[in-house]
Structure formats: structure tokens, C-alpha cells
Length: 249
Ligand code: ADP
Ligand code: MG
Image (cartoon, rainbow, N blue to C red; front, side, top):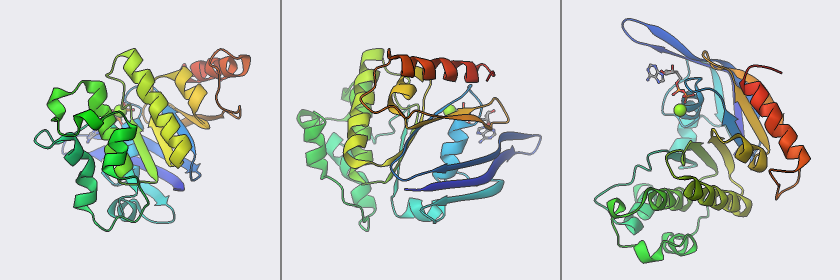
């Protein structure tokens, strides 16, 4: 899915105060691109994803997803959302959680693997009838990932989905997402604090400034995959990203 953000801004206004979370963000992402977003906490990364997902409306500017509005894209189930909390339904089994988007919207039009197939391929088949609360955090995120895939969404918005997990689980799930991206080629926007991981995986990395959030720089990583985090080219990118985050460069 193509994403075109033109001068998008967001100011949160309530009775006593107003806060500009995002100032005039202009960004184009091509269909199938893997883009990471990094920036200091509170700089508007989640706000940016929520705008694209039509969870909130921009104060200014326009957002187009394949030339449609975010609302239209959401209605077509073209967007999958993953966050730190997997938001599974506790009273439904793993299989029913994965099936849920298909039940809620029968008109979904994207080719997608079946829920059973997904559970098998993600090593979850033994847990199809288990309830989410009996699974580890990493397994719950795996279920959330399977559910996102079941929708056949062409845009994956990932808001630090694995930040709360231990390092090994985080790495394993990151690899999983990467190989699924290689296989299905959705457009991925992934908010992360893992700079080295971003340099290893992403086509481009968007570096944001502190509030009001804006784009400081966009770093392209042209090296072919698989990439080695210790290769001179990737190390160079990691250093560059670090100094951009610190406000230099
Ligand atoms: P990040 O994800 O980069 O940490 P957020 O996008 O969550 O940052 O938030 C950006 C800024 O907007 C923060 O200062 C946050 O407090 C503020 N903010 C986010 N959502 C709301 C809201 N619903 N009402 C008021 N302020 C908000
Ligand atoms: Mg956030």
C-alpha cells in the first residue's frame, strides 16, 4: 500500500491546554517498503501511526493510502495494527482470536492464508484451543501477528510491538516478521528503539525530532539482505542514526 502524508500535523486540544504532537510531516512510502521510525519518546511516533490507522484525525494536511482516505482503508481491513499490548480477547481461544477479523468483516478482499495454516506455520497449532492468558507474552504477540496476517492487510503498523519482551523472544519475533515481510511484501511502518535492528532490516529509517515531532532525516539503507550488523556499511548507518538521534548531522 502506498502512503502519502502531505503536511500532516496534529494538535491535541482539551479544555485547558493544547499540545502540538506532530508538526507538518511530509512523507511518501512506496508499496512493499519496510520503513522503521525512530525518535525520542513523546515525539509523536504513536500519533503518526494512529493518524494513518484512522484512530485519530489530523489537525492539518492530508493522508492518502493507495489514493484513498485512511477511513476507507480501515473499512476495507487493509491495515493491521500491532502494539506492545497484543489486545487479544481473553474469553476466546487462540484460533478464534486469529479468526476474529474474518468474522467481523466478511467482505475482506485480500488473499490471505487461512487461520489454521497460519497457526501451523507460526508454531502455534498446539495452542489453537488455549486461552491467551495461559500463553507467554511472546506467544501472545505471535497470536497477534497471526491475526494481523489473517486479515491479508497490505499495511502493517507496528508500534513497538515487542518492546516489553525479553531480548531473545524479541529477536525471534523480529525475524518472524521479517521473513513474513519477505514472503508477503506488505508495507511496514515499524516504530522501534532498536537502532541496529532498524539498520539491518529497513529499506529506510525515519528519524524524528523531539516535540513537536517532525522528520529530522530519512536514512536509506541500500545494502542487499541478509545484512550483517557488524559489516562496515551497516555499522556506518548505525553510527549515523545514533548521531541523528542525538540531534547532530
Ligand atoms: P511517542 O509514541 O513518540 O512516544 P506519542 O505520539 O504517544 O509519542 O505522543 C506525542 C505527544 O502527544 C506526547 O507529548 C503525548 O503526551 C501527547 N499525546 C498523545 N496522545 C494524546 C491525547 N490523546 N491527548 C493529549 N495529548 C496526547
Ligand atoms: Mg509511542
